[in-house]
Image (cartoon, rainbow, N blue to C red):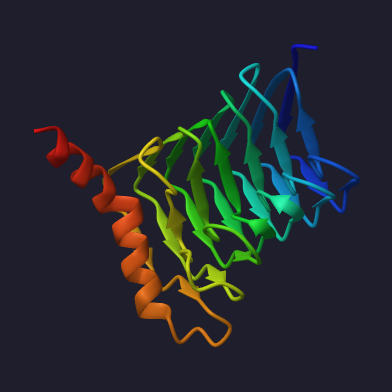
Length: 212
């Protein structure tokens, strides 16, 4: 309980969990990882590589790669539960597969600075890259979200999805959200790009206007 896990120049590869957190499952504690690779891990439920359960959990990832992980549930790369905190600096999140999003925020707080989220696949629900749900707050700075796919669904987004006004996304610096697709043939790519922009960027503008 309350443990702190520190990893530097490490590699977490080929691990499997029957429930949550293919490589690391934190239910009360923190993770700090620098120049570390999380790849090829599998979770039977959520958090293909990393799982943060609640408000007693946090993770700071610096110059890390989270690639080719799988979750049957949410968060092919990282799942953040209610009240947990994720801080990512210069991280790459790619090739992850889940029922819902590579990075799934469920009432959590996340700051991503210099992140590249690309080539992730979502098979069921929400976005393929970043899902900001249940009152979550996310900050994106100088980040790229591109080439993510939701091949089985057309009603959601390939990139970023905010299901309701309880959650908030703040952006700064140079942001690219582009070429994220929905639909098996990818023919709805343009539609998906428009949804990315509407859900991830303009929703907060609409909220501000409604309060004036």
